[in-house]
Length: 420
Image 1: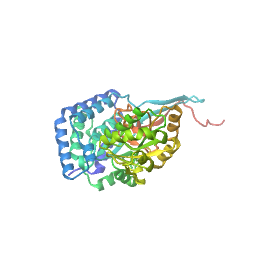
Image 2: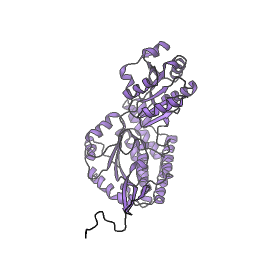
Image 3: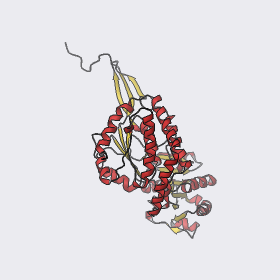
Image 4: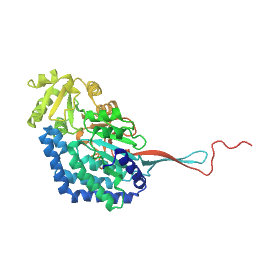
């Protein structure tokens, strides 16, 4: 008989004490062994993934969902490399972020400690199994991994490799636990375990994230959508802007850091839009434009109001011509999802105003939205992207899976000395 979700959480919680106490050297050795097991067990992992991909195709799933699901030798090699990159990161546990001696002589420190037990609830992408496990482990946490049914065989094969590494290092396998019961009732029960689970992180489509946020009795870090914008300013380098547009929209349109809307200053529209639309169409992108956009490229599909709020996750983009920077910022505030915004400009003051006014988790100046990724931003890998303004905002790496606590050192000081 399989263990209940509470039993799995209790076992993970018991393992947490061991993992939290590991030295940086011990964690690094275990992570390197995990990467090695992913390499060694690649044939079985890829065979398991092929089963999932075949089932997804037979079920008629959309191409962009199958792309998220699919692994090959290169992608799986990148997953293992991401685990190695996490191993090479500085250990966040025990880092002292503040040290101050107060007038009464007590020494006040703020020190990073693990969060504890993290519930990772995700769909489609099997690489999340390894990324989440590695980051949680590096930060001294244990993790319950509940992936989606579409990646079940892939997730089970990856988790088995990671647990083999833990066992080889003499560490409790419960530190990385895959929840194989895929019933919705199990997720609901997991989200109620406020006495055991310290944080839930959903990663997937908007419906999954809203389900977790609405039913959880544990803290949740989330982002609902990635409606990312590129704003091309009046004096932008046109070739640079075109590179950002093509990279942001076409290299992998199914991911949350791909561009969904292009905003173009009216003074740049005449010479930028025709070439930009031609380049997008040449790569199979459907372009939908406002009336002003269609005055420059008349045969475009008309963009609807809903298009500007859409996360297409496909080769589709909405375009709007705007009068100035302020209008672009107002558009982003109205339709954006606080994920990633990009400005292409040679005007330092325009860049400063854009960065200051846009409140999204990641803001790019003359760089592609596709860099909005934990690995690209130096985190080794990412467990998710937070647009929740709590202790973490933007791509989350190992440090975001710790919290700061106060440690006070004294020599017998008391706050209210006895009188007389």
